[in-house]
Image (cartoon, rainbow, N blue to C red; front, side, top):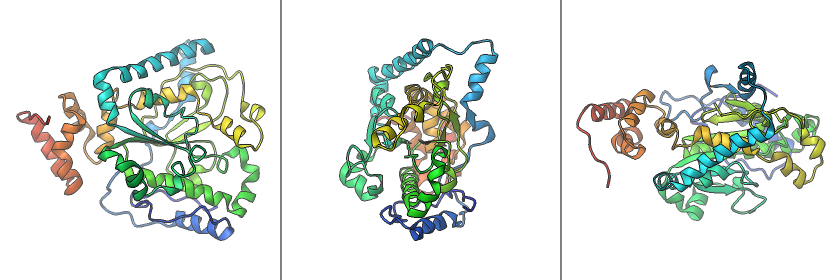
Length: 374
């Protein structure tokens, strides 16, 4: 394979590139690879920073956090101790869903969870009151098929979510054709078109991210060739389940735009790499068992990325061309995301005038306060 290309900001002008996973032959596979290798001219103006590569300080390895935890004099936790920590995260999550003010705010935030058969990754968001839409073709061959996504699909079936912003897109991309654990089958899959179909599925996922431009998006996969074959920039976070309370290993990577500094609850990997020792086989049932999202990861990811605890993530990524310090100052003065939007939206979205948007926000912060409540 040639070296992968980097995703350009205009590469997924969405649902228009028309890749189909129905064609399974060498020509289809090579055609998709050619499209990946094409390098469109990067425009001077960048409409967003959805696919920017993380800086060195933004790349988080939870193993390093677990090692530092031990070096500080702490022993690895016993599983019941880790469970207790995760239970605290659960209570914190539930408290958002129980508190009227945070519940009202969260209910206006939409989360799309793709390839989420178990619902584990999206569970904390649902408990906190976010409006979660869960998609998996196993549960609904029509509504759960990511390859059917299009502007018309979301308009006809979901009414464009009532015009609300998509706060997060979570994607546990099927790993069968990407994970290094299955490398012995790569040559056959590359030849018969199976890999091409999986690339198309992944690219449709990135296209969905491009279309909705959420504040938070994350794609999860075991170590393998997902990034290489689909043009993603460097991954942002790596972890094994034992770093977050589950006593086994399964090296997993997360790509996307999110806070990768997840909390940890490190335990010994007493069960080793149990994925194929306990869940071997080719059946869909065993594939599902290998793909189950660890509970500690689900709640740890929520703790690090929910809007209530980290408002700068929402506003900073929504207006990702503006100065983040200025946006933080606006939050510190008590402005809500909606109020900031009233000030900057025309300049930012309609006029594409970032300088004007920052000037309007600065003038507001330095002048009389205005009540934007309806």
